[in-house]
Amino acid sequence: MSAMDIKKEEALKRAIRMEEEGKRFYLQAADKSQSLLARRLFEELAREEDLHIKKIQEIYGRLKEGKLLGEWITSVADPSKLEKVFQDSLVEKAMDTTDDLEALRFALDREEKSIKYYGDLAEETADPQERRFYLTLSHEERGHYLQIMDSIEYLTDPVGWLRLQEKGGLDGG
Image (cartoon, rainbow, N blue to C red; front, side, top):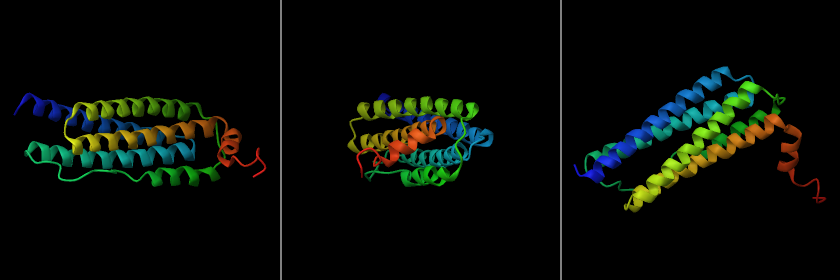
């Protein structure tokens, strides 16, 4: 195995560990969440981390066998499910729950690190299909990041969040 192959193998092993750690964190945070929004968001994020783990393991197996990816990976998870969790939770009365907000802010940090890690891996590889895979993971982690940001905004200022979402009140539309 060449040095480049060992580097790829280590990168994928680290990616799996990061996703597993993320899943554990999200499940623990869901169990401790006091708000329905935070709980459902964490549960869905844990499910998506599972999908990421499965796809990374699949890619790892192919590369370990010396096979090319053989496909362009454009999606690993379903971002619309995260959006649905958020929309469904709007029926809940928002609570400024310190523990939930702290967990959400920690989750932001985790997602930011994942975005950077996958972005760096994309820049380092010469294989266009591998690059696309890493960029897809980075893109999905960025979607998680934005959903977490929305959740923080909603829990801290539900009226302001709704005003921004509606966007029609100020321009007469």
